[in-house]
Length: 87
Image (cartoon, rainbow, N blue to C red; front, side, top):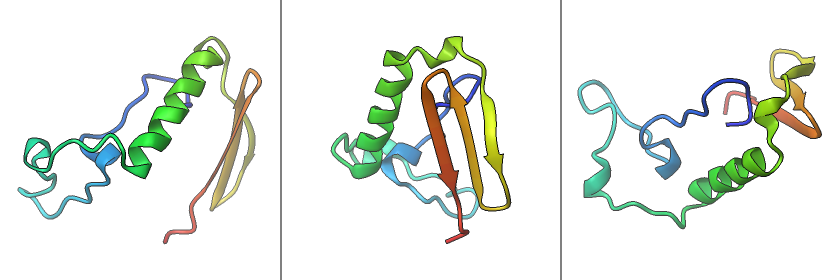
């Protein structure tokens, strides 16, 4: 959402859907209701609001740090730090 390019959230990710093996790789969204109060949904809404308010689309993405489990970049005055320990 904050990186360069078109912001993409894969179908169901904002609902915390984990999917399964093909052909059940994504749950049917309309059968589960659409929870706009889930923590993940609210977190994505905050990130999107920051993206719009800071107008980060007008700034290039500048890599600040990268290794196997951590990546940091900035866009204008917005600094983004991401980590993944594989858990």
